[in-house]
Length: 271
Image (cartoon, rainbow, N blue to C red; front, side, top):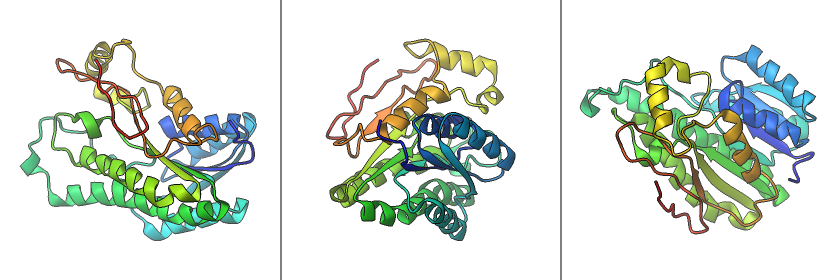
């Protein structure tokens, strides 16, 4: 896919979708900078897997709530490899506890809203700001923003996470116009519930119900998502800016839908 020797920065890459994406880029011969916030040991293991797959690897700490740290992380990558060709903005702030689907909108403190938006929207925007200069200079770049199907379909509960993630969709459209003429293509991937390490905490009842609500009767794995992300981060997407690629967000006893990216950013619906 034309990624050999390209520099890919994958944030939130110590586990789950980010780790699978880092390995996928490594298998394509890319130079992969993978970031972590607290799981340094896990990130180191993923870096070893990237190198075993045929790529080069660098681990860097990055916290979406630390603006100076974001700048330092990107600077470390640029210093090591001269720039960034591909950004996969996958890092996320989940919050300190499991989601409370019964919580009322008005009962969520303003501080929780602020923290969720600061990290997942503004923090991601800051990572983009840091990598864009080198992409513009090279007249080539790929940015993949990892959102969530919750941003489109919603989910029971108060909504700070989905609200913050939906902001990435507007950001992608703005970036597509702002940076597209410089060879930088921007797309959004919005996975539904994916079988990452966090899923078992929801309980088998929820997981089985979610899977039953998907036409294929199976949930996506991190590798499934990583294959799409790697494609969008490659030379294979020469004219695909600003699209929204969604995986069905299953909700028991509710309608589900799947999205397919099209050239004007609309998402046709189907069951």
